[in-house]
Amino acid sequence: MFVAGNFLTALASVLHLLLQVYIWVVIVRALISWVNPDPWNPIVQTLNRLTDPLLEPIRRWMFRMMGYGGIGIDISPLLLIMAIYFVDFFLVGTLSDIGMRLR
Image (spheres, rainbow, N blue to C red):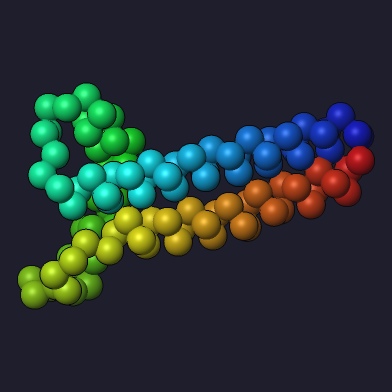
């Protein structure tokens, strides 16, 4: 059973690392959006492709909740980062605990 425990612990570590990297991608995307980025820049396009699939549903949900008036600022990156931290603490913590118990 120690092989399964080691696998789950390693999976939790890799998942934690990937989630932390994605948080930084979201932060960089939010910071770049404050300036007027060139939409044809490959870095900007890559950041948009990586973050838009998760940010757009949050934006649509916020638009429905706030209506047309809204709050005037896009807080969807903040909500996404909070959701990623929740997944990180819950899923990675659970995988790590299960992995430790199987050792």
